[in-house]
Image 1 (cartoon, rainbow, N blue to C red):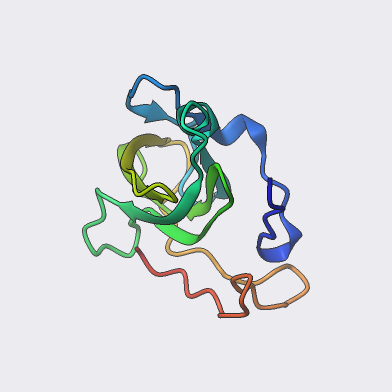
Image 2: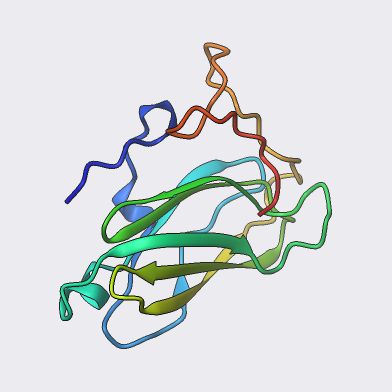
Amino acid sequence: MTDLVLPGGLTPDPARIWHVTPVHAQGAWPVKSSPDALDYGVDFSAFLSGAGDTIRTHTVSVITATGSTYDLTSVWDAHDESRVLMMLGSGVPATMQRVRVKITTTQNRRFEQAMRLWIVDYSAASGKPLMALPTGEQLTTPDGTPLSGTVT
């Protein structure tokens, strides 16, 4: 497996990675509050292993985004051979958000995994998260592009 370099040297938290089985099902991640900016992921390894396939490209989109300041925001996303990882921030409190993770494989399969994420109501709504480390360093994608925090 290729080592995936993530912004800020982040190590993904396995507790927030959904594992796709060979039988398709809608996924759900652990809850977050609006001010949280947390990494989430979808692990397609069991789904892909039967055919010896790997991820070639991916897209992440927030299905429930409306253009609001408080929309759930995909800050960044990346993939390796079997996983798609992303940083999610903001989100309207007391809502169930839906995120679409689409992959195209090296063998030209196309697959879409829909994920649910509950934004809890015990924290006030927060706008798009800051894209800098506490040191003030601007977060960038692995190729050096500054992260904007826009809804994708």
